[in-house]
Length: 295
Image (cartoon, rainbow, N blue to C red; front, side, top):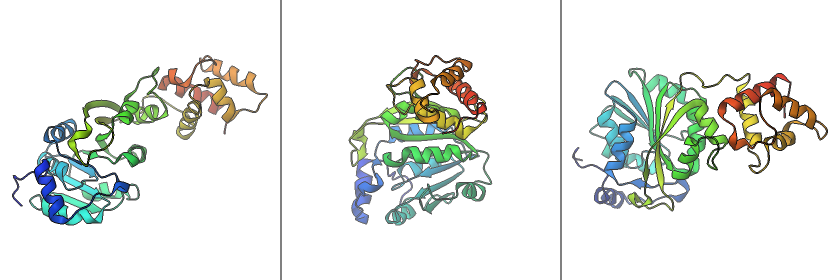
């Protein structure tokens, strides 16, 4: 295949699908992007150069992979669908510094993969068009495993991207916002209409960049407990934080103790979780943890 024949056009995408007799699997959330401008924005947001590496999740037929290959010194693409491997083999044949790994990114030992595949690059970013149905599990795995990442630049469902980047006080702000912002600094790059995919999804997408934090924005006594408190606080959004925490951590007759601890944390019992900043959640979880609270 001629190196100049880019995959990321409607004509080339349709030709490849027809040539290989490829059929889309709805269960894998397969939607191929056919807009070169959007692909360029995704790659640009990752701030790559020849000294850096890129991990792509779900390369499909290689439209984004080609552009990553031109921008990075090393590219590893993890693809779960075995039917796409021969297509990727042909499309990516001109790029010796690109490797395709067959597997499920949620089951792969990513730390071992990084040590083996990216040992000769200075920094690594994840760059991907993620299937909607596994967006959150994949992103949380990438963040929680504390991989040596610089950026995570992904195209995901627009509503989910907005929740990740949301500030306190709005309806988009929730436990996902806090989890993502604990590990990274999110920034919305652009929105992507559903019309630039084959096949077209039912909703619009957005590109979001997560700049991975080297240091956490708050100090927590116990990280797992911090996230447990956050989840409990948002369990019923219309309820006050006092009522949500009481249901999870306190017996029926312990409201006085709960309100005392909320006071120590400087939080009014009548507030709702969506009004609390990540700093306030950290302070609250530390107070509850030090008081010996467990669910």
